[in-house]
Each structure stands twice: as structure tokens, then as C-alpha cells.
Image (tube, rainbow, N blue to C red; front, side, top):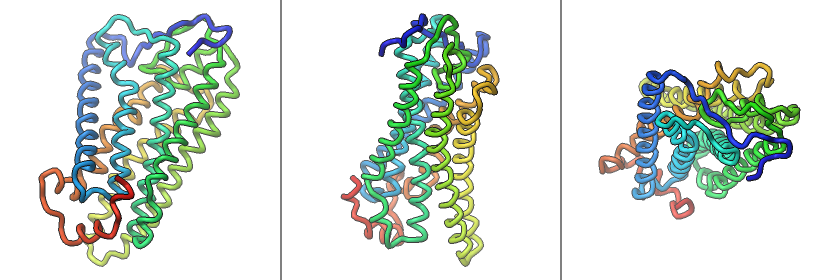
Length: 319
């Protein structure tokens, strides 16, 4: 990837979250632990979904894809962060910076879309079970990935036409759109408008779809006769909505506001939530608390109800 015209900067310096050696050591331990948990949790989900035929249903197909995205998402930033904390060289090349931003935005966009589709998946399964196998398909997942990559390609292309004159210090732990726009000596209004339109449209539509799906799911839950059944269903929805709110809320606050209000020093911790913590929480919230996944993990037999629901869906369509 070549540098844009008028750019004298060949590399950027990533200062990270702290310049204090003692704090850096603590952050290294925290990030390493989170990364390990995220990798183990998501790889475990992939292994279970791939090997256990009882999990070959659309819901677990999307969970498997979410695990792939989460592993890629967190891997686009954390390994470089850990390397920087162990090395005195905190630089990243222009091409490396652009690639890191591209993959981070790509996987982040796909994550938004998959979370929205997973909420819709639950809505279809609960409210329209007879149409479940028709609505949910592998082609839908491919379209989500294409949309995420297209969104990232637009942003990366616009970054390449910006000029970076002298200042190459990013008060951040990875290359992201807002700090790069602040560092540029070019007019970034077009970039900000495109970020608002494309990025905002992708995130807002996913969030809206998620919320609408859960409204209908909530209405269906209220029709459950037993109080214990309603509480159990609501607890599951609450945990899902908590993760979704954290993820979408921090992304909207980071990207959909004027560049002049962005502070590299104050806002650099926000991506830790949606880019590092959420990929660790997803396998726990969406999968490891699920009784079917736990049954597959410990080799238990599914109940008659679960077996009946699985038999209605042709798993070969998804795996």
C-alpha cells in the first residue's frame, strides 16, 4: 500500500493507553488474559458447533460465524498491543496502520450485522417457527460479510487520499478512523460525512433491527403462562441486550460525532469495550450459557423438545 501524495510520514507511533511502565505491565497482563479467554471461548464454540450434529441449526451456524469474527476482530489489535508493551519500538508502518484499520473496521461491521441478524433469528424461531429454515440461510451470512468488507473498503480508500505532514504520534493503542482524521493535515470533511452515512447507516440499522426483534420477542415472552418461564426468558434477553447496548452504544459515540469533539487521550479507552471486551463476552453470553451448548460440551443427551426442534431443520443446508 503506497503512501498518499503530500505525505511525509512513513510510520506512526502508537502510545497505547499509558506511558507508565508499571501501568503498562498491568495492562499487558489484562489484555493477555482477555485475549486468551476470547480465543479459548470462541474456538471452543467453533469446535462444538462443527463436531456436534445436534448443533447444526441456523442459530448455531450464526454463533459459529460470530466466533470467527470475534477471533479475527480481537486479533486485529491485541497482538500488536502486547508486542508494543514488551518492546521499546511502538511504531507501525503506514501500510501496517492502514491494514490494521481496514480489518478492524471490517470485522467490527460484520459483528454489528451478525448481532442484528442473530436477534432476528431468535424472533423468527420464536414467533414464526414454521418459516425458520427458509428465512435463515448461509447466503445471508455471506451477504453480511460482503457488506462489512465494503464498508471498510470505503473508509480505507478515503484515508489513503489524506496527507499526513509531520505529526505521526497517535495517542491510541491501534490505528482507527477518528485519531487518524485528527492527525491529518488535509480537509477531512468528506471522510466524516462518509463515516456518518455508511458507518452510521450500518450500525444504526443493525441496532434498530435488534431492538425491534427483541420487542416482538418480549411480547411473545409475556404470553408464557408460568412466571418461572417468563423470568428465565427475560434473563436471557437481558444479558443479550446488555452486550448489544455496550457494543452499539460505544461504537455510535466513537464514530458518529464531529471530529472536533473527539479526544485521543480521553476517548482511546472506548474501543477497549467494543473491540476487546465484547469479543471475550460473546461466547459466554450467547453460547456457553446455552443449555444445548453445555450439553454438547459435557456429552449430555438433548431433551425430547430439543431433538424435535432440530429434526425439523435440514442441517445440510448450513454445514
